[in-house]
Image 1 (tube, helix red, strand yellow):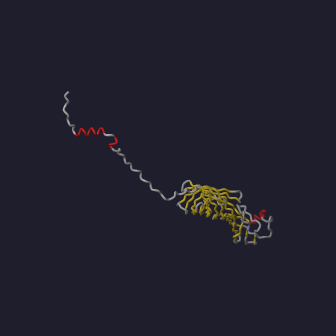
Image 2: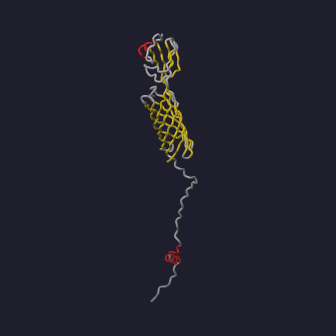
Image 3: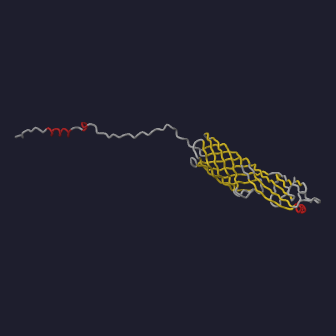
Length: 284
């Protein structure tokens, strides 16, 4: 048998065969993908703010600067009044030369009083709250002062007369008559009227922090007791105030104008300005 002649393999062919038959570990570790870690978030060293209490109760006291009045005029013939049995003593005065025409100018006034009450507030937003309150003003002074002029032209004034209401006015015990052309002085007791205020409204804090100016708006009613019959009037409220907070406690100062419609004494729109200050308690 004749063998073919031996040929020396080419160098490139040998390298290709060695590369194809090399084990997998000889190729070295597989390439890995480098992934950058997420950026670190800054850490705040400040503590989270505590939740603001949403409820407040204020117990307050103050003063009402109410000052309203109503004037009325009355003219009558004193001789006819006495001869007709209208004398406060129940008899006529024969032999007296009494003045005929008498003119009476009376003014009934209702003055101020102390105020005491409580208010509840509920915050719907950080600065915005709804409120409800009730208060009592027990010392309004109802008084009628009159001036009496007789036909001689002499007038006197400064007397107090309670209940001199309407064209049938009366001169009760304590009346004084000094003779023809003289003067009538009428002095009777005063009267105390109590006002009960109740209503609801809105409040808005103009600033944050421990000192907070605020504005208020609301509506309600006032009931007057001590008069006959008891009267009730509607009212609107416009006001401003200031809160001073010390944690859960604090104080509150308010100036509120109660605009009273159809006020029972005058029948007109009257302003009852009230200044109050109170102790405040906050809770969740």
